[in-house]
Image (cartoon, rainbow, N blue to C red; front, side):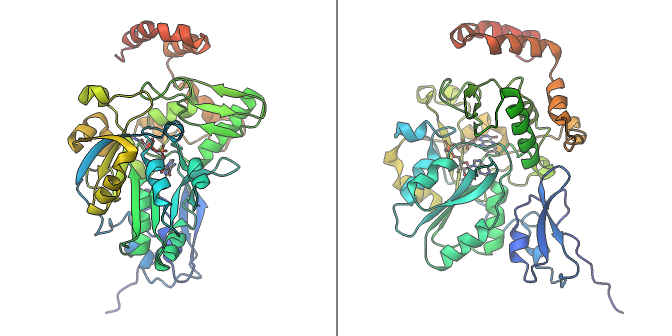
Length: 410
Ligand SMILES: Cc1cc2nc3c(=O)[nH]c(=O)nc-3n(C[C@H](O)[C@H](O)[C@H](O)COP(=O)(O)OP(=O)(O)OC[C@H]3O[C@@H](n4cnc5c(N)ncnc54)[C@H](O)[C@@H]3O)c2cc1C
């Protein structure tokens, strides 16, 4: 009896697709292209005229099957802060990525991949072969980055014997290994404890809205500037137009409201298989949330990262650079206590059903919808705090605490 051959329309269920692009790069008939879906996330589309139904994309998709050789238990856990303060100041937490990346580039022929904004503030997995290329990769960009051809570039370099450090979200690192199909001695990988990623289109629309609000195109945007508040007391975004620099609060900011409530994440983030202590990368980096409770003497306003060495390669890499950091040993269970995204994904809130429905409207309705989801009392309290001079606002921490009690969030 003849069995019907299944016709592949996509390498995986689109709700579980992370958009890593391994399938596009693997396809021997170049039948897969990435397109933005209606929410603005990249998804693969198979051209049936070119597809030979070989099944390679489905078989290698990391969302169908985790690359078997990458399911590592943490070998050692650390807290760390880079000693070089100039570099540390530009990093989101303890500067671990930059500290490692800068040293990695000392080996001739080596390359580092990480997320940087292009000139239009689109987040892309980019390559650096010198120190100047590392700086734009520093700092967290809370939006999904485009992996482009970075996996193919990585393979080419590795096949030519060049050392590569690849840093990205766990699903991107899993995508890289799925594409490579094996590990390489000269490849080292870093992933993040990840809250999830909103869509590039949402971020683009938000920047346009911010530009209108501040009277000029946004030419630079930092999700978490340390300039004024340091590390450990919430995030302070910073934007620049051609004529001004603005620091602002997150409580009334629509993008952060969506991000913090986890209502703007990619669908696959809510079932993320990488939110686990079993890690895909050699090293995992994160904010060391809770360090003030667990290791009070190590709390530092300049930033403290948690570092999980998940393989012997990762442990050796970090140990070799230990003198560049103020570092201390801790335990993965302690890191997990302050950072639940290490062991479970965000729950999908009801608001996720409708949050993207207005994304295509021309009047920034999505941004207004996100703003109006803040309760009026909270809007009032944080509205007052945001117009106060910073010194005065600092002294009003007690008031803020009281406000939180009133809002039932203490
Ligand atoms: C989307 C996202 C969600 C995160 N969620 C959490 C969380 O829930 N808990 C937590 O403790 N930490 C989280 N982090 C990690 C945290 O923000 C810091 O990146 C981490 O503490 C490392 O800081 P650092 O000072 O060592 O490095 P930094 O100098 O800040 O290095 C930044 C590193 O992050 C990478 N990166 C930045 N943006 C992106 C992006 N959009 N996509 C892929 N890679 C990116 C860069 O390539 C670089 O390797 C998240 C980061 C991102 C990007």
